[in-house]
Length: 242
Image 1 (cartoon, rainbow, N blue to C red):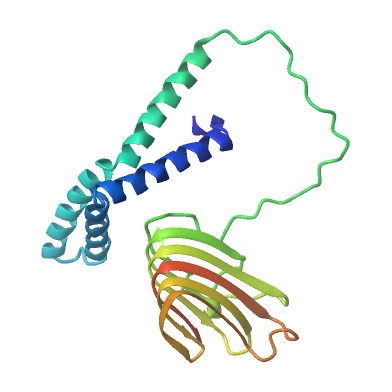
Image 2: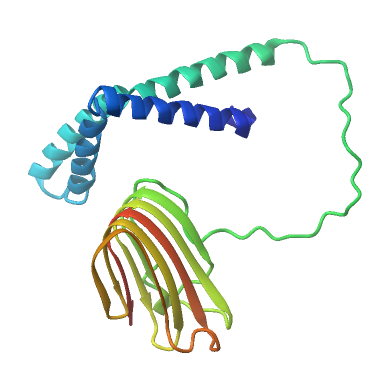
């Protein structure tokens, strides 16, 4: 259904939702937003410790609290109303008789190239941990984003091409760990709103809305090499040799 929603209308929905969120923060002192964030933190923290009965109880209470706080946000209510309205309009449109007019398509003055679809190394999930396989796996460039969870990429279990491998990660909350073999050159460009960084022995105690960039000495002339581009709102990053 939402595949028929144009990017223009979708962007307007996001803009209005963001305005409502800012309105709630300013005039209602955060409203249910802070409650949802705190409850979401406890959901994530207890979810990793579900082997204990106590943490199962904490997880259940936090999940209920997060659900009520989340759906009490003005922006979320707006998104729900917008989805219902779009569903109704789409249903009305589908019940109408199709137009008899023949659509006109522009003539193609080019030939389609033959391409191969490549499955990504990770499936995109907003709330989950990611880790490369502990056994040998085929390397594919990484381009991923997420909200909660840790990202762990171990390059010692794969064979990098005699070229530049790329790891691009955009994340909200969580830690990033990347393990690089000694024979691989490294370039890393990391930006963080709040967090710490350990890059091949170089340690940054606090990154407050700051970017850092490091390259190994022979990165520009030696292969294989890996280019790491990461951005995170709150969390730590560690890049080390294995």
